[in-house]
Picture 1 (spheres, rainbow, N blue to C red):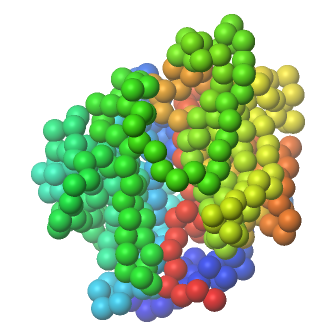
Picture 2 (picture 1 turned 180 degrees about the vertical axis):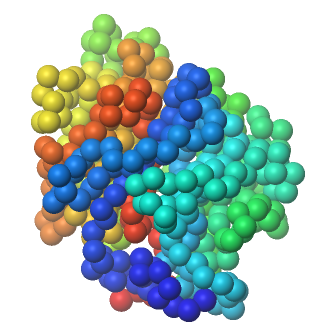
Length: 402
């Protein structure tokens, strides 16, 4: 593959940071009841556009009940790092690979003919994933130099583990098999990421499908503990302000549900979905993070409003986080997982998306008062992950470090 085929492939983090900003965000939308078709929505991120902050594109998927989750691009900057595993043909950041966590079905959407109107061009059915890789419940998609990597929570039966990583062909989008040749003792699955120059990959653990799909079992959270470098305390609250699941505790836990690291590895963003807070940490010294900024929106008790709609007390809170390549813009959506939304926000989590402007020199964040797609903008669906046009902080890995 000739280098530079796609101008959004960057050889280094510095090149990605210096690139032009995103103009669109692709946002997964889902119906928690499973009766309306899920969708891929498109939001205008160009601050100079007359439709800035609005939903400007919409693609209904063929089915409902997928629980769209952590989708990704078919190819990214890692395509420049083949190292002897050359791809024969042309790769470009063109297709969104969108897994359904509940249906085990994965859709491929083409964004090239019209970036504001992606088209479904391929479907990976649950049966193919189970037969060729032995997995189900696809969770996260990453574009790698040798193919598309898709982590899965479940085994072929769709309920239990072990989960793992399936490989998907760059061109045909066919499942080519399981990535692991020796999976070791790992039973639970979650995500996968790598250090390309060190030729090392790491997989993480969460749960099997049967442990999450009927709601939260607190006993599943006990007994596992790692070294702490950040502690975020719960906030005391009156029992009457809490959903039934939290009333015995008399407090709102932060419920950290996502983290995202800036491309320069300096700023870590932590979403506290329970308290309705997004925290910014300076992790220049990764063993001693320093809190540098905080913004509140939503929250189980706070229900903090957005400056664009000060009369609207928000449910949900900062959840899935995406950081622009230059680190100056932070986007987040408010829905975690349909069954868990209903446990912690039983009066309806709603649907909204926000953007923060981040200070990349000294730290700090402010809410953009003009960017607030919400409610009917998403036609009654909930919104989960977003991907930024041309890439974002969590979708690329690079061949070189400057």
